[in-house]
Amino acid sequence: MKILYSCLSRSWGGMEMITLIFIRKLIERKYQVELLCVKESRMHIEANNLGLIIHPVKASGYFHPAAIFKIASLIKKNNYKLVHTQASKDLWLLVPALKIASSKIPLFLTKQMGSFIVKKDYLHRFLYQRVTKAFAISTVIKNNLLETTPLQANKIELLYNAVDVKKFDPAKADRNKVRKEFNIAEDEIVIGMIARFSPGKGHEEFLQSARTLSSKHKNLKFIVVGEASRGEDEYANSIKNLADKLGITNIIFAGFRSDTPDVLSAFDIFIFPSHAEAFGIALIEAMAMERASVCANADGVLDIAVDDVTNLLFQNKNAEDLASKTELLINDGNKRLQMGKAARERVLKVFNLEIITDKTIEFYNKSLNNN
Image (cartoon, rainbow, N blue to C red; front, side, top):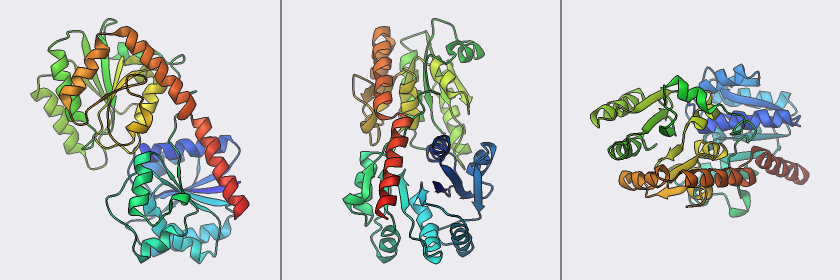
């Protein structure tokens, strides 16, 4: 089956990364998948490095006639069985292109982010009526689709994002590699977070809780992994300055890391303090690595975490509660181990890349049979 995936984003984060993960998994399953992306974007570079078949377009804004006609030509020339986009914004190019190409192939939309804008006017009805099926990555996103778009409930399916449990396997990771790199003693408890530097990711609460915990425990090390989001270098610097201002000396800003499984293996406790996350890929990766975690009780996290079983939940944006819940894990090594085991078991059953890929293919086949 030949499939055209679309992710016309200039950014580089969870949505873009998971798109490439799913494409590679489908290719592994013997599907021929090609990617439509923005020319010279980070997605273009990363996909090219992976050796994927890429169709780059120069697209900016919601209406770009040259890109529309290029996509229409692409659809006409290739025998795609379906199109799958990862962003609703792409519909502004894909729907007209499919119309110009006189193509009736199924169009799938994965909704990765919520919207505060109601999109039920004539133009949006025209766009969304062409969508065969929309996948919501969490309950909060499913509700958001119902509230803000013309899509009816029968066109929306809850389909979680996923993690490759073979890659994120604690038995394969090297716990000591990263700890040695940063001169972390064996008896030090490492508390870490992995997130792009972007407002709302919870870096402030992480640092505030770090100050509180460091005043009580002398064997702690804090690690922040991640690079600045596009255009957020100033914000990233402000977070590092805040750490200095708070007097936190036992902290490491590790920057971007490609060895995420080894990094997570070096952690003892994972913190996910994001204020409003549609899902939480970094969280399920940590859970797959059997890390005990403390998470903000908000939005997509509520689909992932089982409080006091697989994770501990803290009151969103509350650094004091974050510190309190983290301290429970600092003081109880057995609880950390039990919670980590339960977390991986949940990932294996619910957020396993193989299972989610199977479900995606089922929807593809069903739509093709009905088309």
